[in-house]
Image 1 (spheres, rainbow, N blue to C red):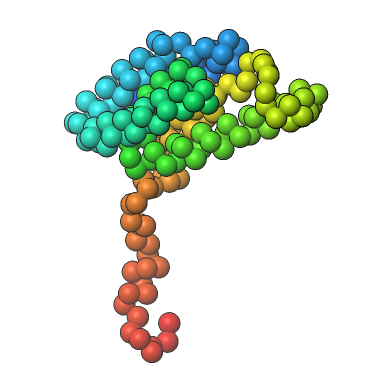
Image 2: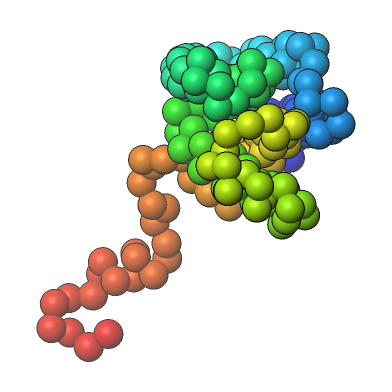
Length: 188
């Protein structure tokens, strides 16, 4: 394993720990500590230095898109300010290539968490549906947990070669190469 791969693994482990702390805090207190967001940004700076600046522009673009989108969601009271900050910090690691994966993974995880919340409290769910969401329903869904799940997927799936960046060409396989040398009309 090269030094760069080792650094990426160590950073991924540290990011995982920080995301776990942020998620636990959000589940328990419905607050995401600012230090976790700053720690994620600091870990990204260490990563980008280790990579010699590779991916910085993409990361800044992804974080800018994430910030603009989540601030709008915060303005409409869909998510909290901590969720906005945490998602933006995680978007640095995603870059533009993995930002769609981060969005989809976070959204799906949030949906599962919301369903679990509704199923675990059926009376509350019935009252919410009856009153069409109007009223004070308490603490809501801890979306920091969903963001942490999305962040873990974005950190680890590429390191384990489970996903490619959005828009990247498909890898060439041995089968593709062998088919390229077969003459048209010749038996395969």
